[in-house]
Image 1 (cartoon, one colour):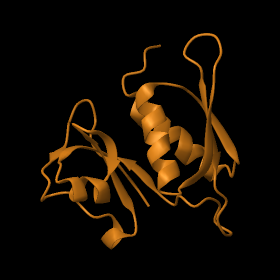
Image 2 (tube, rainbow, N blue to C red; image 1 turned 45 degrees about the vertical axis):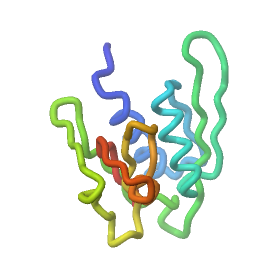
Image 3 (spheres, rainbow, N blue to C red; image 1 turned 60 degrees about the vertical axis):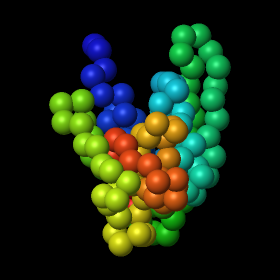
Length: 132
């Protein structure tokens, strides 16, 4: 079965692992998923990530951070731009998630970055997802 939206599948795998209180998660690797995971690591939503080389495309192993009684540090993760409805924002229209407590992740001409990094660089782009 062909995957039509690998980013949505990646975010859903993270959401399901957090709901099941897993400490780690294995997903098929790609350059885009790797960059998204690096942004989550940089923003301290996950504790570590490792690329496991193997046959085919490899595996991206994500180590989730443990939070309080509710499970992980990530309480919500949402896909904004989909293959059927792309959402682009200009540098002045980048939304804040929960008044700045969450993070929007954008795909810009300079690569995948957070909303704060895009505002500082003066870039807009495709609003891929929001994490809080």
